[in-house]
Image (cartoon, rainbow, N blue to C red; front, side, top):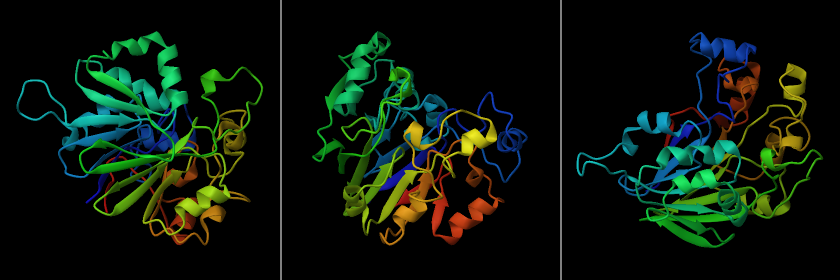
Length: 301
């Protein structure tokens, strides 16, 4: 059996974002039931309910662990954790900053593709993760590995961009070399695909996902120019390495005909109207067979 818990479903900054006075953020901040808050995107998975793998260490990881009893320390010994490993899908701030929360000499395995490991090596603050306790292990792409008992992971490249902080000004373009990866997570004959960032659908990715049991996919923006139209930023979704949900070449169109049985959007930006349960956009997604992830959502396959 594969058990997954959504620790966070929001994009970088979460929902409401700390400096946003957008209409959705105002509703979330006011406690509106139709605008549930989201922390930044992260997932926990287990095959046995005892050993857990955290996918992406968001800046909100401490509060996510506190809100998730399955990740709490056991009664004995004094210091312990059921988190056996952390797996990174990229090296953006919102995927790795939470690693600093896990610096208290607790052993776990840390997996990332080569570009992600390079970012960690280049930033001395991550030496706070004592190598005597935290091993850094490179994920070979398209090759299975076992980060915890009963779980098989396979990382595969998806179109993406270098981390925003690594850009030098000009558009660096889309790459498919491990800067962004998707994960096929399997246990007990079931497989979940987790792809929180993807710049475009390719024939190879379509073939990989065709007929999948469950896919959690990049839902950052509903429309490509959403942030520009809202006055929240100067870039399109595609410029940031995220394909939009709607419109030509969007994920709704790209998944049509793939036969994915369960489709769930994750990594939703605070401007995305699909976060609002009473929005026309949310109703449209439901009619198309898509769900929108919430913090604390549990999936069993």
